[in-house]
Length: 419
Ligand code: AMP
Image (tube, rainbow, N blue to C red; front, side, top):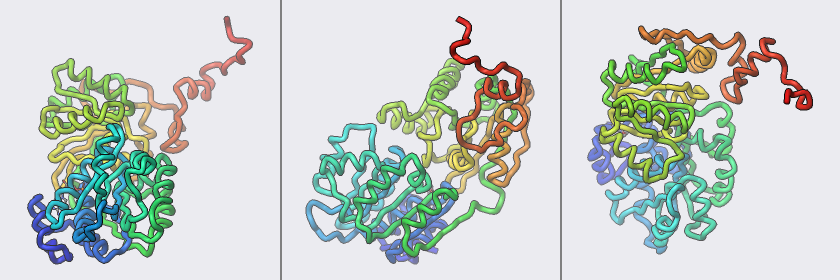
């Protein structure tokens, strides 16, 4: 099937082909005609399945042939949860927008950088704005843009935008949009808790669900049992043994990203951290250098790595396990993009075994724990029952658990504390 057969104009089909897309992916084949027809869409498709182009191509086509009004009224709003996704999605839209005459203007709005250039860029208006919610609201407050003319709203990584962390901001943005509009929600996962919100946003949507390919999975998933204290060593060992040209390693905290990167770097591996605590300039530089293969190992947190598209990334390592099954899916989806293959390795320390089992159960799979010679785990496993309280939420500390098991005395009241 060709892109033209989906109803796309010659210039846009050519632009897709110029990006190396020979034919539409399944999600594109379903989504493009529906978006062109003005329908609401809820698309659930695995990471790397071509979702960005699935909405970007028809969106740009609908925006082409603008009224000539100046400043340009914002007719489409693409909301994304992170700056990196804003940049990535903006680049795809701009690529397609450049194929149109008269050209379609794409503006970007994301936090972490000075607001002034973004305000300047919006002076002439824009046909489509790609934004993170917080900065978008700042720009509205400063009268740099109005959203009352938006005809199409896209939520990219919609599950994340519909989740609690963004709820208040999303609500404020929605209140600024016309009630009558086209809504496009795309994501790799739609957990139950956001289904109702998603449904409330949509009007008679086309529901698209593309499942991960049934043939041999492109992502080989492995899990290795190891002690917490030996993980950095094991990572070094794997980087040397497995011949990974590049590897994205997920850790739980910004501190861990810094700390492990430092240790690897001292051991002669080109490793660097990438997380939300870095300046936007530093983040972009790390990403560009990683894509250019100047860094071999990038240590990152969930926050910073969602939705990132890095070509030919052969391996992902969960140094710390993700908090939720959805995060697991998103993390491992950074490898094996666009039909390539890749490996996702999870380090399972004795204490997090129950947590890993929960993730496996929720995802309907079971991975055998490998033991790498020289890295046999010796730490005590988690006490029975730990982890049964749910995947998310505060986990009891080691002392809490010992106390619960009666192995430590209860905390003395403050007035009886030894002085
Ligand atoms: P996405 O799911 O939007 O993050 O896209 C994943 C990757 O697939 C990106 O690197 C795209 O450039 C690539 N891609 C998107 N559509 C196609 C297509 N029709 N054919 C080949 N590659 C594609």
